[in-house]
Length: 124
Image (tube, rainbow, N blue to C red; front, side, top):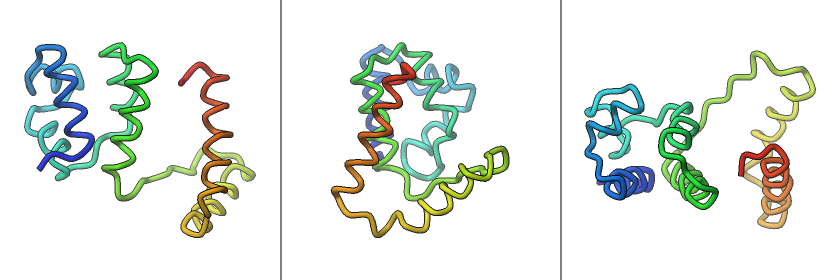
């Protein structure tokens, strides 16, 4: 069964007249690995987000759809704190501990801050 991410990737391929093998070549993986990601059997490598945006020239709306598909598909994330300064590391850990108890208003406020930062940096 295709995940939300799998549906996005398949639609992207169909819209560009590509098959699984074409996209897997662009991403530098085997077609079987890409298929496993689409079907939720493997996690999408984090670098695929930027690779997909660049390789397919995704516009802002498509980037939002990709981000939403990734969020819907992922059940967990890995966060490497190794190179963070102490304040950022503390924030990441604090956020992870409090994440499950944030109410909708708090979530929307945090999203607004992060989206504003993306726009300021030209990412969104």
